[in-house]
Amino acid sequence: MALSGRLLVAVFCLLALLLLTVNYLYVYRFGHELSSLVTQDGSQKTATADVPAAATGEIEYERGREEGYNQEEDGWCANVAGQHYLTNVANTWTISCPPAAGGKALIVCFQANLEEQPDNFCVVKNAVYNPPETPAPAKRKPVERRPKNSTTPAASYRWNGNRERRRRDPNGPNGHGWSVACRLVGEWQHGVQAPRNFPHYFGWTGAGPQLHKIQMGGGSEKSIGEEEKECHPPIMLVQLEGNGNIWHTMMEMWSALLTIEILKRAKAAREAIGLTTGTEGGEWDGTDMQVYMENMASEMHISPIFDLWRLVTGRPPANTTSLAHGCYQAVILPLAGGANPFWKDHWRERTCRSPSLLDSFVDRVLSFYGVDDATSSSPSISHVQGSNRESAPMRVTVIARDHNRVILHLHAYLKALRIAFPAAEISSESLESLTVSQQLRLAQSTDVLIGVTGAGLTHTMFLRRGSAVVELLQPWPFMYYGFANVARMRGVEYLSLHGREIGIADAAKNWQLDDIDVSEEAFVDTVGRAINAVQRRRLAG
Image (cartoon, rainbow, N blue to C red; front, side, top):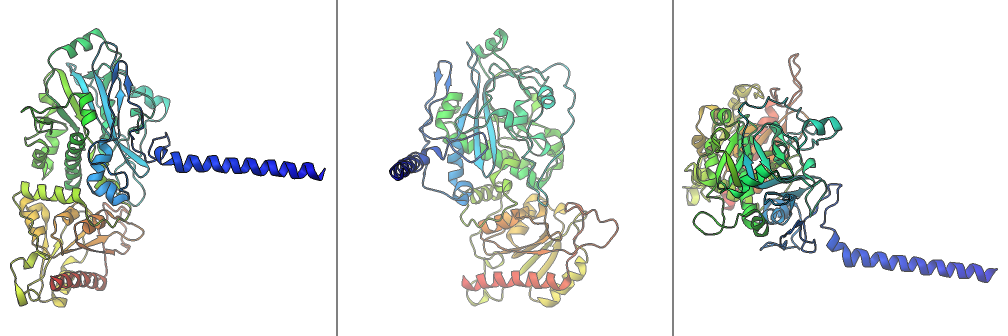
């Protein structure tokens, strides 16, 4: 009896050892290959060379790593703030809408896997535009959703529920004029989620809502016949948020630029789409493309930086009302502004110090407006040499708002600052009264910028290295890290100060509406620390 018991124990131990060995081999031999693949739970993954090619009928495309990929590079800063972000997304693509029998039309979609929320953009090959004679009825705008105490884009909405799917069936006609002879896939594929799960952002923007405006089909003789005709050159189709906010507009335009940079790196995907050469016969670079916009008429009149869209292709955008009928070689549905990696993660604190994507973007914007970004350690002493560096005047600029989020008692606080720092040049500026070029020059000549959380602090990214920014936040527990993260990336000292609860009856308890009240002592002390930080950098050279 005792022998049988010992034998059972021995057998159990052998089985346990065998299971541990199998587990070890699985994790350490195969785990690194599987860790970058995608499951349907939304966890972060990228496509790998081990993933088989996407089979679309008789079409098969090579799916290797694009040039410049470095598998060892890791961390948020490397994956988001630098060139690695572009390469990662360029390698995470699939054919989300295979061509119908006898047709050539298809849709290639890309995915950026940041944190728990993927972001997508797509390119439609051989899309046909044939708008109805009467405009489609306007759809009710969905309710925006955002995490509590943050200004993140509403990127968590999904098309859930049978009623919602029936109302926005991507394979049914919806009167927007676009059609393509293919059918969307329904599952994760090569690192890209199913199109029905693509998120939407502010103003019902993003590739998901745009795809839902396209009539998908199995390939009628009419649609396939349109493909046989000579197609119009590639275009980019942008759905604007339409609120004119300088930060929102800048993120939208920047996302369009990032989309082109990603496509330039995605050679295999471009071959599947047919974007191989430009108009001059060289490698495709997006310069031969026209940008068309929905909501353009209203946006161009309310956005002060609308002209910045010329940066995308070197030409002004056009309204979708001027779109010609017929087949289009490629229609790019770009990353939405809310999917921009420098906006998407702004509710988490980051400490990146070398953001090549941000630096490149800032240089392009300053160059576009004819504003030079000098390399001096402090803006107001770029022309000062030797012993005069310490005595050069410190330029302190307070962004004054005329409505919403007004700094209460600002005049008294400015007086207190001038008494505490008599050698400093202290001013209050209303940005609405300045042109964009004037605003950028103001930022470039400022040592310490002070403002309330909002679009005005967009200029944090245009401050010169060695300067400082003071952000006035709504009362605790409100937190926002967007401008703090940008400041660190740009080599700008960042300080913040929470306001006090406003004891007035008409306070809305809304960070976007309420004025801000800080104590004079805390205000002067915080600005003083910012001035001292700039002064130390001056002395350090």
